Figure 1: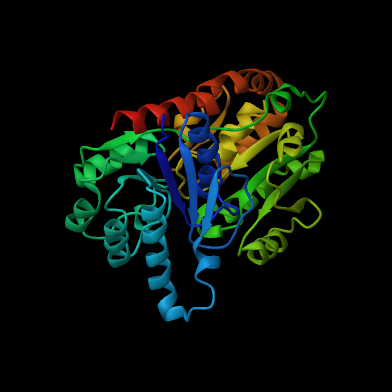
Figure 2: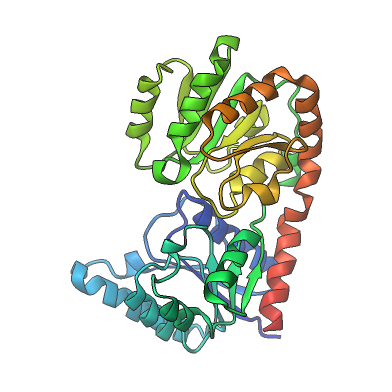
Length: 360
């Protein structure tokens, strides 16, 4: 029996939630019986993947920049044709209308599925409702990573082909079974260093107000990104030198997550943050702001973590202190963490993708 051929098109496989998901999706689809092809626009690979890889940046090397984009389009078209790709899953940001109309034309012989990874719609939708409908209304499905995203799309564009499939966590069984005898006095953030999305100003100000450093706690920021210098500057501004540590990006920071007292998320907006579900899967509760979207669909306040009003420094500092001072609350949230994300296992989410792709 011939396998259906699926191409996952993404910006890259490097250092980001959407990129990490694109890598995970290759494993989910391969285990579901599809032949998987990854097509990446930029030559940046940090995360594992399976199946064939077609690197548009490498393949178009040597072209002048003005022609390079055209060459990438031609290479993409040829690759889809030559490999008889049945299904295209587009996981990129899509914020230039003309480019997206051309790309949709390039995909025309395949069934098209688009993913919306973020509540920041500027990255995925043209400013015009008319063109948004032209772009999306006739594709197989618009896959949303949270219910809040799907609701917003339905409200704004009245599209009938939306579906929510959450992001999964992918952690080996033996990794999940490991236990830590005692957590360290560490609050951990892990992810991209991007201030306009992650709001490190709020995180550092709340840590400063919490005065947890007086109890021996440190804030560890693990990751990489363009705003590392900005963060260093903010650490100085809040007089937190010696209390905040910047650690390099790590593909699987499971040991650090397990050893942390709790992890933290202070974003302006999200989609469905992998860092939150990975943290809970490893038994580490989370303190997160109630931003759009994701945290409120994962964190049940005072059950597996603490959900705090967004942009509220005082409440965030208080929540951090509660997890340190209220041993009973902390123990309760910690003991519920793993069970609360069982429905987001790779197997469970793989089944949803398999059903979606086979039913259309």
